[in-house]
Image 1 (cartoon, helix red, strand yellow):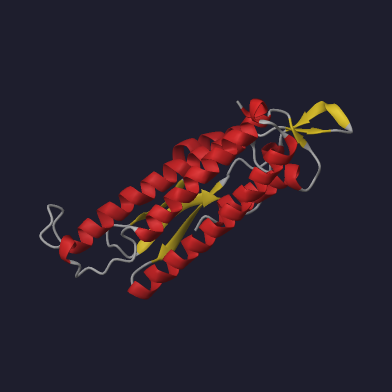
Image 2 (cartoon, rainbow, N blue to C red):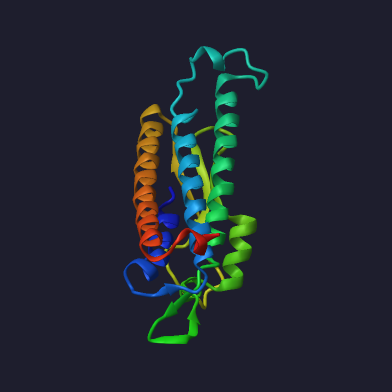
Amino acid sequence: MLKDVLKLSKSLYNVFLLQGKTPAKVRSLYDSYRNLDAMINKIHLVADHYLVLRLDESFLQNSSYGEPKEKWRRVLNDDLETLNQSVKKHLLCLQTLTAIDPNNPEEPIYPLEQKFNDKAYYGFVRDHYDVGHVNAEGTHLVSMILTNTYDPKNYQVLKADHIEIDTYEKKVALQNLLKEKAKRFAELKNDIAEYLKSHYIIEDLL
């Protein structure tokens, strides 16, 4: 879960962090940094709110949703949709990143277009990307995520995926995975923060 987002984020940010390119519009990079911070908070929401609750918890009983499992599923899906909207915002913000090569400043570089068809990416992420939702039986997270094969000539940018959560142990494993991803995103966020602080002043970001 979120492996596709982490892979793409690192790849695009490394254009600035490791490859020596400069942002054509630093505000776009700053906006991406802020969206990344918000997304990390939503990852923690999913990991720490309802995901690993046992169904005999008292506040799951006698719910207007019906069975405890149904309340658990509904609330977790609400949390996942909150995360999904944040992820989509982050992915669309990545699309706005434009770089300049100091050795060839007349030709801007669009890093995302080197990996995905630009129009297909925008449409599929906006309308179809799904970080995951719990199926009716409460046994799986069903998702529609970015393909792990980068090809700007390919209009199919998403692929179906699923994660089993039919036991408590699998839910805990997913929680641990989410926390690990949040940690990796936080490291990336800190790298971006250091880059911005070392290259720009506050007036450049406003």
